[in-house]
Amino acid sequence: MSSDSTKPEDYLNKINEVRTLLGTLPEKSSEFCTDAAITRYLAARNGHVKKATNMLKETLKWRTQYKPEEIRWEEIAREAETGKIYRANYTDKYGRTVLVMKPSSQNTKSYKGQIRFLVYCMENAILNLSDNQEQMVWLIDFHGFNMSHISLKVSRETAHVLQEHYPERLGMAILYNPPKIFEPFYKMVKPFLEPKTCNKVKFVYSDDNLSKKLLEDLFDIEQLEVAFGGKNSDAGFSFEKYAEKMRGDDLKFFGSTTVVSSASAHLTNSDSEASDSENKHLVDKEDEKIKNGTLQSPLDTTRTSKPEA
Image (cartoon, rainbow, N blue to C red; front, side, top):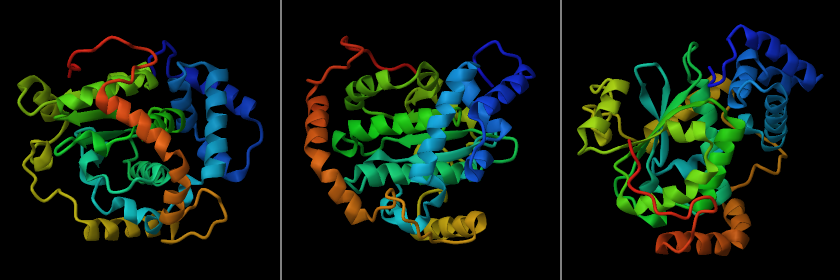
């Protein structure tokens, strides 16, 4: 549950302390603050009640403004066309939902659109968790990857959203066959990751038996798709089939495939592209420095060796 020394039964008292500090909440916020949710925030802040409460308050504020529960497939379908992120049709041996990510399939330049799509995928993965499971696994396939497929700005925001608003939801992130050129980029992103998150990032290489064993221990190889060394050739991505599945999920969980909202966060793809353009030149400059090896990490100026699995 947590890396601190708090016993599970002691969390009941801490949960009540958090509820007291939160005070009276609107209906949606109150529904979000289940005992399990509060426990995750306590775990993320090592059992510190005030820190966990402040973290949870920020998430409630974010959810009120961003409205992640109102994102529907039709809003983000364009981002999903190439299968750059999709929910696998299998779980790991612990029953955890699996999100497959393929950076080389990046098909848009919209920073806001990409983050909104990620949030939709996170919400959907959580809704599809089994009753006894709260975490998911990310499988990241680097086949065909080059530095034009990735952005420091998006990576930073991904880390922020994951760590601040979905604490204790990531069980493991497996980076499969990352190329040498990815190392300086990871070196730049790592300072923005909390130690707990870093410990969940595993580098796996198809030509390394030791790291491959991690996949074999985690997955049924018969179910794991071929791209990750498995034997399931039918587990790839089909946009048409996936769109049908996601529309089905929207109907199942929300009773509708569309939402009419006045929230400013609901942007069309064209709006999102336009709103990003004013910052794009700054992002491009920063990313260009990474690709050229001239941008240094704010916390680490020494060159690192190949990350260990």
